[in-house]
Length: 244
Ligand SMILES: O=C1O[C@H](COP(=O)(O)O)[C@@H](O)[C@H](O)[C@H]1O
Picture 1 (cartoon, rainbow, N blue to C red):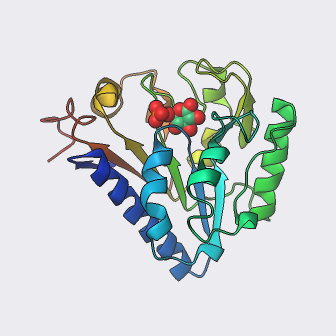
Picture 2: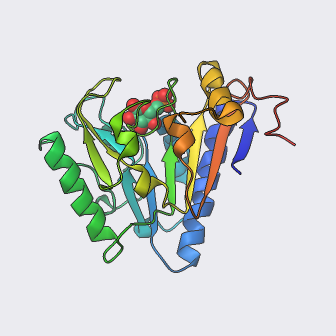
């Protein structure tokens, strides 16, 4: 069962998710491994960039990938990498060689293949890479990464990173992690705040009806899912059996 954590304000959510990331990083380092983490875009970015620069960790052991990314130049405000470059890298002692952006100059198909090859270099010998932590957002339609409701990519089984050129949310061309990779993670953490997310969170967490929305399909076979919500986002979950 997922662990649902609700905090009064967005500011508190931002602090708590950063403490959680710090804990997961330091657990990986204590196991004697690097810390492999996937960052998403959207509203999650600002929650992470606020407090992560001040956590206590060995940044040299971090390996940072993107759960999905928009195929736009690194100077375009739609670029997830741009946001983290401008608001995190440089504020924390992250070594640029330990952060793995896509190559936005390729076609979307080539970009997905190239990003898969990049992933394989960091997880040599692993048929199915196992991330320590994937940090995920959820759109008001229930999408996560660039996996959208009713899209054929929801059934993708063969590739770890897929291209998408018909994203219903602009920009249309993106690359995204697929479920075989996502659901092999040790841990996935969703962050969602604001009243605009309340209805979709009720559908995903309290109702769970078929066909499952993209975010509801995140269910690591040997891992756990955590939710970090503020009161407004959780307002339609109150009194549900999710909280005992
Ligand atoms: O387009 C995207 O949207 C989702 C959700 O974003 P949010 O702003 O509604 O939180 C995000 O997780 C994903 O990385 C991004 O590409």
